[in-house]
Image (cartoon, rainbow, N blue to C red; front, side, top):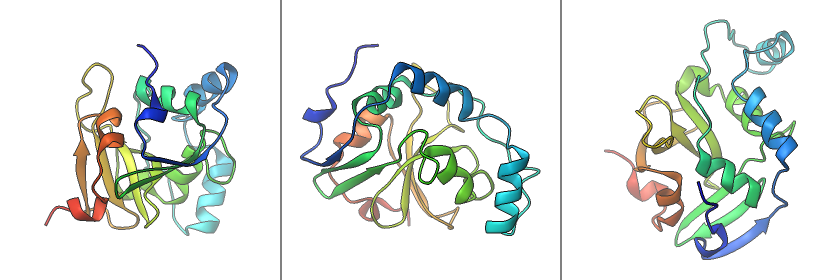
Amino acid sequence: MPEYDWADLFDEILDRRPGFTAEAEQRFCEELFAPISATEAAWLSQELKCECDDWALPAVTIPASYLSLLRWSNGGSFRTGRRKWNLFPALDEETGVRVMMLGYGVPEKTPGLLPIAFNGSGVFYGFDTNADAVDGEYPIRAAECGYPNKGTWIAASLWDAVRGKEAIEELWES
């Protein structure tokens, strides 16, 4: 798959960060969907006051478009029209993808969502891994934190979602 020209997609690049290395990409792919560790379970029990024994993490291949975006900028903030993206850094111990997924209870509240960014107003952008992948790509869903039934599918792919200009709140399902 060719690399996307991400810089041409955004109207404004607010905070571009260095892309991740091949070593970081390999580690990310190996660790993202690993079983929840005893350390993570203890953290979730203490911080969220919840048990995660029955949480299932997606067992999917990370979409190539997402890996391409992380190679271009591992985290950062971008805007197209009224749609803002605050991209989670892949492996950051405080705001990385896995930390955000577990810390917000996504496996319990929105099973199958692979969150990759916030919109700046408490709404996740994420791959809907419950849907069928098309050429290895999952549709993008917007889901409000803590409200599993409030959300909408916004695009068939990450590429299409990034090109959208509407604010997510304008697309909510009624």
